[in-house]
Image (cartoon, rainbow, N blue to C red):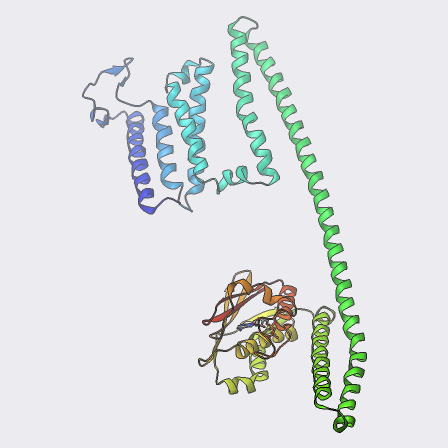
Length: 450
Ligand code: ADP
């Protein structure tokens, strides 16, 4: 985008051109002599006995007037449509003059020099291309079927009538036929060529449409395969974790009995081994429980209904009240909206993010803030803390299941919380991500579609 100063300069130059052209137009229409033709040229001689030599031709004045105003308006949002129309008018005037020269039509050709006409035509096209992201040019430049067809057909639409007209004119001049048969030939040639262009366009569209349908079909199949394999995987995780629970409970139960009954008969190293086994079994139990929670998310989903987030936030804060008190955290939040959500799942997201904020706090007094912003087609929420932060290279990894950045000795946990949040948020048509600076704190953002 050019700077505002440059745009002002362009507008001033375009304004001067438009005013000069407009005054000339006024002279032609009113018959008054405003004297502008003598500002630079004292010679008042007249051109072929009519207009002063310094004066621009009538249609040039119209064309420059429209081009000047179009240049002033082209970069302004409300004026763009008018600019586009004005540009078409100046291009049409220029084309008329060019055609006048091609067909030696005296009424048009004397009005504007051939090169002036070509320059005005190119200028008009240039102004249209200046804002290729808007109006008709946006359609022409787009990658849609319409854009592709427009780019293919426009040159034909511009060239065919002009070239055929010229051929008809030349044939007539060479004495090959008189005007009436010439016109008939032109009409037939026009029809034949336009029919072939239309036929070619229809074929191209048909081919593009078939390709699109094929791609759509393949996409649907891939999506169906993906969702089948996802469902299989979830089912597998569910069955495996469910079935593993039982033998695991038997193992940990037996080891615990062993520990209680034979405590006195075992030496220190056997005690240590049993303790490790119990620890391991307990950890595995937690992991299996987490996996079960994760795989149940889809199976237990409720419909999305209007849900008051301030109620949910209060509930989430009440659930983590103890650790909030322990950490002496200061919690603030924006006014919460009503959103379309699965209540239980949204509560889980808030709770996981808040308890992570509490868990991964630093040495400073913990400050937690829950924010929200209305983003037209979605809600943007965030939970900000001033805790230990996360190095940027782990920003995506932490959302994968069982991915942790710390040992269990440093911070408890299994690495399931953020994976659960991600799954829930995605089910609500949203995204989740983190922005963080080590030692400074983290902000977890998530969106919910409206
Ligand atoms: P868990 O807390 O059980 O480890 P999560 O999935 O909730 O599992 O988090 C994954 C990892 O992301 C954590 O191990 C931690 O390293 C990092 N993390 C999550 N929340 C925060 C936070 N608020 N500040 C710093 N690190 C965090």
